[in-house]
Image (cartoon, rainbow, N blue to C red):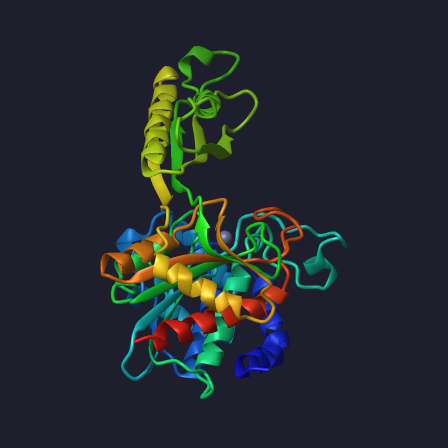
Length: 432
Ligand SMILES: [Zn+2]
């Protein structure tokens, strides 16, 4: 058994414990105070140099930051948490990024991205759902780690523990990027703008699951979609629905008209596209012409052109529906993802490493991610400066699909993830 295999075997239980503690307290993007402060505390203990909050992200590039009241509400809930109390001042106003860096003399800079956020989905609460059965179901109502980012964060910490050990064979600089707000495509860009990936010779990011079973690794994620997330606010005029409906300006109808027409956007030749209105809230009551309506929607495209076409058409539909009902419409871009270009050398490196890991029995060259990601903002910064980047997939048999109430992944993939990243660091820094 190699030192790494022994280390992972010994740490398996603590990896699972850490993952479950995050799963029990899932946090939405830019409110990951409990998660980020635990990560910062552990990295500090292990001797990593830290960049936290403003040192690790540019505030002006934060899209879709929740209102201050939501961030405060999260912090209120964490009152009395000593670790949060110690770190929260360094993470003002939702700036929850944590970067840990460790050096071993001269050598390449390897940056690795781990995201930390959860989703606004109520977690299943029946006996078929393992987290409910084993007592680590979400204690944060309406929030669920339904994409496995609790696993990503646990893998990042497991790796951090391995890298400080004498038996870990690597040199140079390793930088661990713990990213907030991946969901909605919001957290990577402000970190990229802070320069955390600029000098990286290598940058790797990964996702658990993605329809690959435990033991399978895909060295390169394909079919990543560009996406644009928009919030639209329609403002009309209230009026008595019986006495003077003609005096009203109906924001609800504008939102409903826009919704139906967004989903009727024309097909696009040559590239897959998506559109979804995921949330629509309007009105105050039965007998009042609705004077406000708020919509959360997104469009996606396989190519930049297709995505830009969809976003342009979506804006036109939102504005036209508002015009039709004589209401005002404000459109805010609240998130964005872009496609990744995996460098052949980096993909080959992942394939080589995965091929010799105990617990990995199938290595694919590529497999579809099946969604959007904002890690490419970080990858591009490394690539623009001559670095090599790759986004790979760590198979994990799922209880149900990503972003669903019954989502849960196979915890055996945590140890595999640590071994993959550890192997990648060793391989990337051993070559001259
Ligand atoms: Zn995800």
